[in-house]
Length: 240
Ligand code: URA
Image (cartoon, rainbow, N blue to C red; front, side):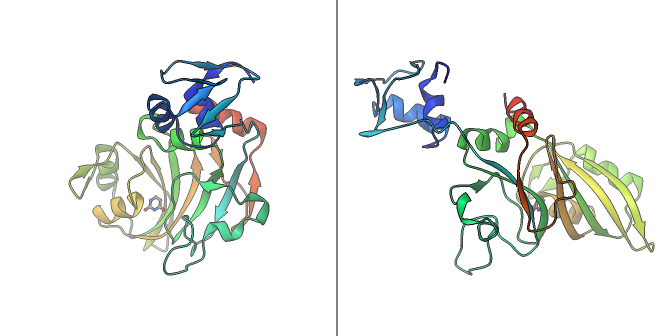
């Protein structure tokens, strides 16, 4: 381990986000080698003993990063009151501590990233990092060019204007539906479905195909795999 800032150490250890770690420090709840460290900017070196609320915090260096092809009909949160199946049910026992980065709707399939790296998860979902996500959607009707432009211009969704997005027709099916590829750089609730509804071309089915540099490729629905080292590094670079 290299020297690192105390708040980063706490976040990397998975106990909380970096922002909340700063609060813990300022509240005087963290000590390094027996001395309270209640100022931001303290560094932790190899061999230092960090204690938070009376418990030693050890760095788990080896985080796990998994990409899953989420099937339709699964929620991305832990179990809820209606007991619908959760993506957690698809993970074999050894991955109990993983949680999804961002969400996909119950009826959306495709790329879901899961990790126990709270710091990276927070960055990838924070709007300021503008991580691009692409979707393949089957929509009802064939929007003309002028209508597609509205994605680029921004659409009003319940009083909020969307950031410029891209949409491209990939395939027309029997003059009645078409497959479009949509790229967003923000993640409002049900954003693709609401944007398509707003232009009058509702989504019939939706799949996420990429998050930043990660692509779903040929991973089958319901299957998951560990990210390669290169994929992990690309993600970390993306989030600074
Ligand atoms: N947009 C949606 O409408 N649904 C998703 O699951 C993801 C993006």
